[in-house]
Length: 424
Ligand SMILES: *Cc1c(COP(=O)(O)O)cnc(C)c1O
Image (cartoon, rainbow, N blue to C red):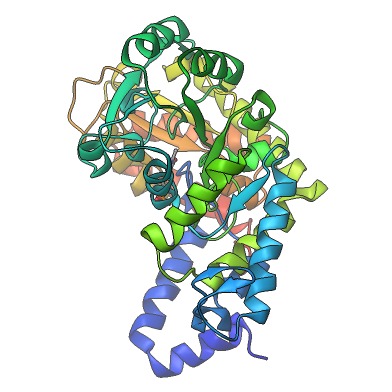
């Protein structure tokens, strides 16, 4: 049987142009420091499934109820993914593992439970919410009426639950949506649920960023607080292939979600990706993964200590999860774009990011976002992350000093190549 590695050798022979580009990316990922909060490195098992022969198979439908023949093996693969996922998130009674990614998982869920014009209460994008939670540039924003809640205090990260309740009482949302991609504290799910119950709304949490931390028992599980629906990506802290999932604790909603996934909004499921999801879910259930999840947070705390010492302004005052949103304008008199460029020059990859009440535009906002999941996978511990935080501050402060940046670049490369990329 051919493996991922063998196939790469064939690619080298048959399509050197493409092969070389992949090799260059391999080198970039190996020599550089990946601090993009939403990225990670998958395991050899996930690679093997994702690059497997299952990509050839059409399997419209669900296990045991397909519209194509020859599904006896992929049926078992998909059922394995479902069963493993349900074990990982106690309280979920039904899972759909077919959504192609995080945005489709959310769009499918909205379509399954809402009618056009229905109101959804979601986290403000500038306060950490995600594009797929109804940003005006998205298609869903033309279909449903999204209303916002925010943080009460951006220096502690506390959500304004009183305002959330008042808005809910006034707007009567059909769905109350929790979840974020640039927020560094945990949520008070019980408060969300109580407000939703008061106005008869469905509760949904998008755990895309923190799925691995919940599976690793480092953060709270929304199902423990009675949430109806949880959506996620599988490729961030959960460390699986690029993909999406929808889980629910409600049998009625489960039927609607399955129907809207297929045939409502997708065709054939990507069986190779579903196999890779199953592999990742099994890995996430191990004690090693729990240690990994704990280390992600310990590493973030190590960075937090340095940032505090250096007087860096962290939105929400610090972090309880894997990520930081840093106000570079206040901290360094440097835009997010300038900070991103200075760090790019020393092979540290992260992204510029708007901060709450940002007055600058999205192409050069006032901050940066970074996170610890990827480098924790490579084996970085507190010592490496302490040094990394110092390097970040030094590099932004020396953004116009090529000599210092050159020195820092050499140090970053030396740190990174000591920690191999899994599967490479
Ligand atoms: C990343 C993310 C998504 C989107 O995932 P894609 O796979 O990029 O479509 C959705 N919701 C949240 C909260 C995210 O962080």
